[in-house]
Structure formats: structure tokens, C-alpha cells
Image (tube, rainbow, N blue to C red):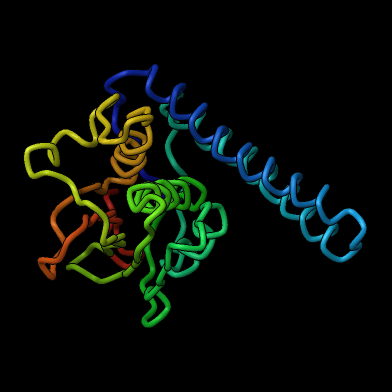
Length: 229
């Protein structure tokens, strides 16, 4: 199956998004190498840290290829993937400190989505990292869920952080818009580009339970939904 990418509003966004993604990968590699140096006398730990670096470099190469496909307007080759698998892969690349509890409820029920798995994982990872950073040093809870909505599967990331003001929600996916003091305003626009390329949507709203915090949603085509010929 293929999905046709949405025309990019600004080709430069893809270039900046690629740099943003590589920065995230390099941070993971740098952390793993630091731990490898720390544990260099422990052969088992050393091997584990070096393996983590190698996996992240492989992932970075896959991300480069996938993002370049977006930039070129190449049709995406998609396949059916379980939402829980996508979330598990995304979690492995997110930097979470001890004060943050990351809850994953996607494995409770299987939800198959049709996607380019590399790009889908990066979109989810961006939302997870965004929520973790929103919690800051005080910490809190980030929860990921998946649910069927008609012919779509919604993967949602909720946190109990400071939330997003209603006046800002509609612009968060625009390039350079950020609520972080040191933010680049690139991660969420990249997520929107990825979702449009899949014929899906990226949304943000208040938490469904009315609690403190924010909710971000990725609306993917369900694997069994009719596709355009």
C-alpha cells in the first residue's frame, strides 16, 4: 500500500526537522557512550551501552532516509503495524528522568494502523519527548493510549504538566511556534507533516478527564480501512 505525501508548505521545515531528529539521536548516542566510559570495567554493561549506541545510529540512518522521502515528495510505502509496537519503539528513544512515570496502555488491545513505521515512530517519540520536557524537573505522569475511532486509530499522549493555553493550541503545529524557553518550534510541525503524509491528522486538546495537563493525538488510518485507489 502507498500513501501520498501532502505538499510541504516550506521545504526548509523538512531540513530543519531532519537536523532536529539527528540532534535527538546524537543525544542518545552521547548518553550511551558516557555510560560506556563509566562502566568500561564491567564487560556486560559496556556491551549493553555500545549496543544501544549502535541501535540508535541504525535508527538515525533509517530516519534520514524516511525524512528525505518526505522532502522529495516520494510516495510512502506503508504497512500494517500494531500501535503498541510503534509506541514501544518510540519509548526506547525518549530520554526520561527518574521523576517522570511513563505509562503505556496501548498493549491492552491490538490496534493495527497503516503507516511508514519509521516516520510513525518518530512522530510518537516527538510527542513523548515533548510531554516529558513539559513536566520538567518536578516530574509527573505521561500516559499513552490507542483507540479505534471509525476508520482511524488514535494514538494519544497525555501528561499532567502545565498544559497548553487554549489560545495557543491551534498554532502549536505551526513552524517556530513553541511554549518552551529553549524550544525550536520544529518537533510538532514535523509531526504534522508526517501525519499529513499518511492522510492522517495531528491534534492537541485539553485532557479528556478535565485534569491538569495536555493531550496530543495522532490520527492514523486503520489497517483495515478502505484505501484510495
